[in-house]
Image 1 (cartoon, chains in turn blue, green):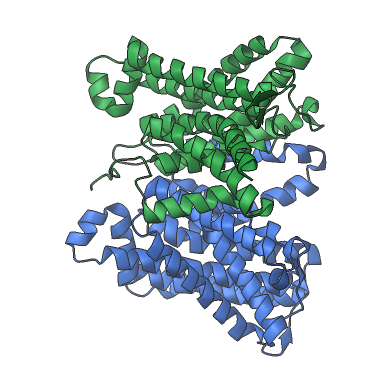
Image 2 (cartoon, rainbow over the protein chains, first blue to last red):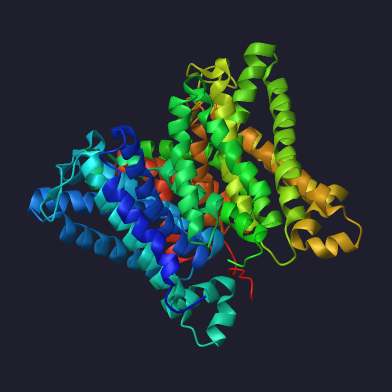
Amino acid sequence: MYGSPSYARLAPLLALVVIGIVLPPLVPQYFLSLGNTLMMYAILAVGLDLLLGWAGQFAFAHIAFYGVGVYGTVLLQSKLGIPFIPGVLIAAALAGLIAFLIAVAAIRLHSVYLALATFAFAESAQWVFNSWEGLTGGADGLRIAPPSVLGWTTGTDARAFPVIAIILALVIGATMYLTRSRLGRSLCAVRDSEHAAAVSGIDVFRTRIWAFVISGTYAGVAGGTFALFQSFVNPEAFGFSQIVLVLSMVVVGGLGTLPGPLIGAVLLGLLPEIMRTAMRGLFVWQELVYGLILILSMMFMPRGIWGLIAARGGRSK
Amino acid sequence: MLISLLQAIASGVVTGCAYALVALSLVMIYKSTDVINFGGGEMVMIGGYLAMFALLAIGLPYAGAFVFAAVVAFMVGAAFDRVVLDRMLGRALPGQSVLVAMVIATVGLSYVLKGLVRVVPYTEEVRRLAPLFAGDPVFLGPIILQRQDIAIVVIAVLLMRAWWAFFNFTLLGKALRATSQNPRAAALIGIPVRAMRMTIWGIAAIFAAMAGILLGPKLLMTPDMGSVVILAFAAAIVGGFHNLPGCILGGVVLGVVQNLVGLYISSRAIVLTPFVVIMLVLVLRPQGLFGGAVVTKKV
């Protein structure tokens, strides 16, 4: 799978943008808010999948880069008056830079060691968000002033929805090109066997570092979209349960595929909403249900929902 | 000053012994199945709650509570392997790795155990286990030790001795070690590898649960107390993750370092200790302080 994606594959992106622009006046605010959340998770999950599914790096630091994206975008706007688009680009670049430093420090590590080192970094980052009260407001949190995108003030869900839909479409499009590029194929080669990749002339270290940087940048962009539709942020949004949530979106959806993390983001993103509204009385059972879903989906779909669909359809991914 | 330092070290050794038991549980599973058990912390937590249930609801003495928790924990661990992991391995196509899926399943296990404990009405209020031994504290020179602290160390050391003897001197223990070293060769000489793996999961769950009982009187019992597992991960990393005696030492080191951080830096930084230890050790000396070379799999 290489070369430019066909127009048939790019068409859904156009549809996403059109839906993003047409939908807001037609549906209730609740669904738009839910849609914004799901689209933000989709960006996060696609970014994590690049590192986890495509490059095979078992790393858990994604939520920390997301946090850098959120606080970066918000603080650049409130303290320095930088508008949203340059702000989110700088914040995402900062997230990518930190991911680069982590990658260089952890480049010798694999499997359990890499997982624990990056997990420890994510938890430390959350501690920093909690303790750096002068900048982040600590546990009391930080108010987010509605950002302005090219003169279009977001801040309500309806006004943020088209912007986030466009960002998501751009991210998915970029991922399509990336996974079909030379770098994308190098990622897969490194995942399948570092030794075989190295003898094929792939610079394994450089490829692994790129995987971290790109994935961290995606997380930074996702953090920027958070600032578009939320009015408040506190460090609880960057804890262990969020790490596990995004990780399960990727794995339940299907590692190393593009539709997989999108499906996972929608399904697992909806789950808490369904538990909270439709099954109100069962809310205390939430953790149990969530755990069972994880276990059962891993038992019966170890390659995720999209892995199962692709296998049924007789297609290779 | 010196006294408070000695006191901090002494109480660090006490909690460190409990961390070491959890680290043993994690490393045992990792060595024999390559799985990182993210449900290890919740096995600690159910250990504490099972003991509380045995003490308060059934009315068993402490010794009975240990046995009760051990039996139930063994069943939980073994059942998880048999019902979930064993099937996943059995369904995997040749050449297809289900390791990531197995690790995610252990995350699922942690949520299931936490969720179960949360819906049991018994656990609604925050409690603390009764002290293992009541009585006046013991003065060891200038250091004050609670009687139960001494009991914690003694029980932890006894458990480790029993574990060591079991794996070195019994036929079952030797078969378990053979299985974790080379499952294929073990199968060839007639060791029932699947049953062995299940037993490892059961024994690992027992060790985690015992740590839960020992920590129960010292920590508040909540369904979230499984977060102590991060200290055990740090202990295992210090020991090298392949090295069982190393991770016992690592547990004690972690307990002491945690107290020293609280004493000399700030009490706010205590929660950060395991994460900083993990990162420092992995970046500077990835094989662990006591480990040999890192084993990597080629191709």
